[in-house]
Length: 257
Ligand code: MG
Image (cartoon, rainbow, N blue to C red):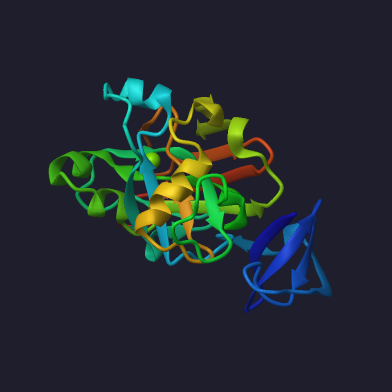
């Protein structure tokens, strides 16, 4: 099943997407819901980020090919950082290069969407707390990351967490093709099978320290091929079995077009 969050006229709602038709549901996918019978053509609605997380948790250095390109050792345990709720933008949104940033990098990532309160989840029981998966970008101010030493500003700035286009609930995340394109040119192409720590291990590790709430997101790390994006660039992340998330880039003075 695919859940999308959308805006139509002045209203915001959630729906179940089948082909190009979105059927509105009575609640959110995180609560009991019913079909309402109200349908929209996908082309007639504005898709929003498919969930409203209280926090986005990013995993560092979680693809073997990316660890290699960064010249780092394979981590012994998952290292995670935070992106605040205000970092989220939806499909078709804009990543705004933050003030003082000279190198803004794209990182295409598989995003886990939590479905129910998750605390100290046992290994192998992750499916009980996961609603589904979507595509994400972990936009990173690379120079500020190095300058600051900690990542609050470099990975948590407004618009640094594009998510979408929808949540796919029926998906085995263990071996999915993930492709990031910059202005239509493939820059990252890998599979989720190259993760150092799989989805179950990540949910178990993170939830041992941090309670995950419905709608929270874990960005599961990026494959090799990261690189800079500039204002007016278009970035897309396509993940097998989910779809494609497209965003554009602007500088902090706003879009140029
Ligand atoms: Mg990342």
